[in-house]
Image (tube, helix red, strand yellow):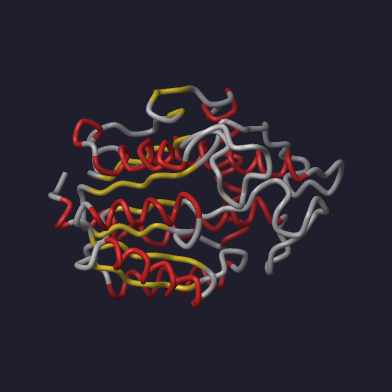
Length: 272
């Protein structure tokens, strides 16, 4: 692992909650941090807040709505063109079970179920498009911010046209992230690029969480930052963590046939 001063890290969903706090933590450690969000005003406010805390912070802002695969492609192209030294991708952006828009089923700009699109497909596509940069910058890493809340994927109704619930939509998207992580680790073995996923903390005080907080934001930052910065994890790949502890996802995450079906579907839906 390089010294933090030589690291370039992209954090998606960096204008709120865990992503915002994580970006500040990584900037304070000396990394160049690329902040992503979908609102320029919030992006400017986030950068100003981090610079007030870390005056020498090296920050770059990228706007993209991850509910649009076209904007994900634009984001990847802009990052790749400007930051050939990108060595870390933190796929943190996501939406919860009930927000935005309440409990009704919603669709992305591409016609996909919204939580599956934003929480999983956007990260899948962004990762795929940035893999050449990450490989060239190896040692490099991919960290997928997932959840202990997981539901098996029904491949006969992935878009949840029947029996929709926001909770089910959210939890299947989070299992999909972990399945992708396991796949990536196998694919990238020997390349110097690792992939891991984690549940950062339970019910942190963020806008995604509507229940009473059970964890402090700093717990999620500590757990996520550890996957990015701990040299003892340099060669660890394909793991799922519950905070700081190794954990095990639902069994479907380790089913090669299910992962192959998800992989084929993801390629079809993203064209990547």
